[in-house]
Image (tube, rainbow, N blue to C red; front, top):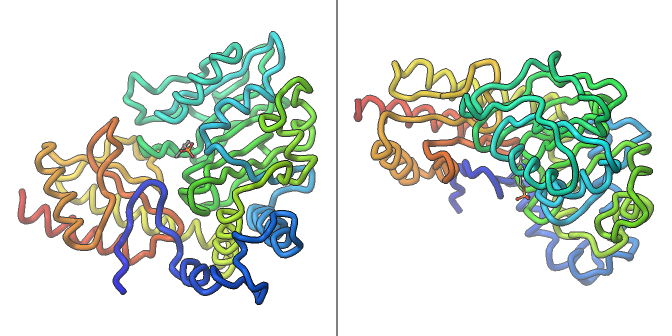
Length: 361
Ligand SMILES: *Cc1c(COP(=O)(O)O)cnc(C)c1O
């Protein structure tokens, strides 16, 4: 078997030991005589997996007791609607930091549901910068402040988070959750599509503070209400059981590697070798992002022409490095280096980058 180095932004690479364990268990889970994805979501075997997955998230991230972990469907995209539907109260407004493509999508949906105030807009700088967290202050009558901790497409990442006082801070952490310690207590709600750093596509993890669960309006339909999911331990309807099972295995893997601080150390290592290669390339490669906000998860870079970028991506694929094409909306190259990317993948990429620049200068 030969596994490629997979730099796709999502769905993304998963730890090999996890894939092997899935293969081992998929036909017969713990002598049940059936698979975990065939059993009822009300069975005691599934319930254990479900609860363990949530407990592991709490343990690894140090989630305080007054928060709940919810498992939902609909991707991070559904949260662009659910957050305003549940948290935006009547005539009040919410605040948003427009940091990149994902924040723009969150903004576009929130606007359809209520008043949205833009605190910062990075668009005129092509989303290469972020605001100083100390300057991010909620507006008058704000229900919450929304940020995107890591912009997967533009490769910008918050290094510190704003302090929004009594106004809940809400974060889309789809592409960097579990990659570094986060002060969960600073946030009212955190959500993340699982397919970047945690599990296969089809699951969204929501971490929500108890008092915000109480905000869900009673006239919301059931699936759209955080309160309904929280009261039923994310078993109001059939949850994405396969994803939650894999999530549990990935969380066990993270724990075995040394937890979130070990993940952070590795992610800084991976990112720094690639950024260093860019900086030392004498302009052959160029990262447009302000060095203070460069993402440790998605490294975006350009070459001098689109033809050269195409050639780079093609030749890398010939050397078992897949998924280096930038998002179709922005072009260029992007190396997504999530938790499951071994350091060897980053080193191999850097080796190739050096060789390619020598040959094509
Ligand atoms: C991938 C991504 C999304 C969209 O997730 P879906 O699961 O496809 O809805 C939203 N926000 C960020 C930051 C992402 O990286």
